[in-house]
Image (cartoon, rainbow over all chains, first blue to last red; front, side):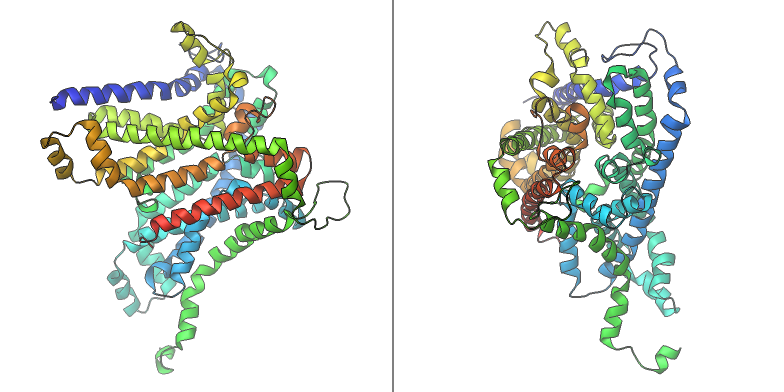
Length: 274
Length: 296
């Protein structure tokens, strides 16, 4: 029998070997972003420079697309979280014959390939004049994220004991008041998870804004980076790497914040229990 | 106070007010999700085009007949199959399980570090991931530099093996999901069971095969279902890396759908392809629901 120590070392070595393969592309983007002569190979830069960041921190390249991303994903997230909180309340609190079919439909929709409906959504948006509008894109973002958000929110809400709310009801609070004043504050971490998860999903999504927005001034970073990269002959890799770092940092930080607060595979516990 | 005076509200009225908070979500879902799906089911049977056409007309199953006679479509179906099997079923699933199993035994700092790296690849925006792996697989990229250093033959991966390059990219990006699912599942296995097997002399592989895998089979089913569905709808990653090329050799169904609908302006035809994807996705979703049926 091998000793636990040997086994731990073997496991550590195996993990580090796999991680080495995972880390190469990440190391490339970070090193290239500060490398004055970045190319496509990962290497230690000859000197460290912030010129790449300087060059991309302009209104056209960084600020406008990032602001657009913030508007789109912020708007979509707010809408998703409000609608999901409202919808989860009756599903979690009251018994009704409608609950089960509703939840099953939601779960079914959670796993539909949304990519597949982008062509009809485009065709539909042209007909109702929502194409190339921020609000249309926000509505679609919210709708596509809602099934999962409702499902998560309901699971978190189930964890808040009903007795606390009954006290509020006796004091004459309406359902809406008890939702806002009692239930939501008690499930703060759950709301944070739904919010961050929705935001991260929208922030990284490329296909939805790529299809639904047309004017360059409205493009979020997800699409503008692709334009940047589109004419490949003239790409300045250091700048593209710097922009990738700027664009990715918010979601990585948000994720780390939530994951640390809830430990490990946070949202998945409630979502894909098997 | 008034309500008490007039007695308890009628049950139907109460059911109605209780269901009221469901309205905003339901309206959004009906208008922006169910609506497009229904519209998809309709235009898939028309010859709708983007330009130069006064009116679309109903053409029945023609789009589907065209598709199954279209070599480019059959090529996309085949590539989608390769992409899904290689990147999801073989790649993400087994690598995710291996990572989770190793993490059970590894020391805490290594576990945290490796978990952090793998999860970062997952959290990165789709386009950034595509761009990083484009750089990795390019002729002058990191992979060839490493191979060169190891004295192994190099090649232009994005040209010679584009579908494998995008499959590996999807493994890089998606493995964290399986890793998290399996870590959660393995943590729920009571220690006594594996310890008892160990005392009985079962080696690592036998314990994995006869005890651990049967105990987490529901997680395996759920995970396979979900990663298949996620992989079926990957667009941005492949688009950034290869645009589906060269010569359609990494063109999976979502990219084929996009090209037919927009570059060739055949919205009806593109939507027929989308409908097929949705039907396949729905079948997987139904199996997934059956796996979970005791949970709702």
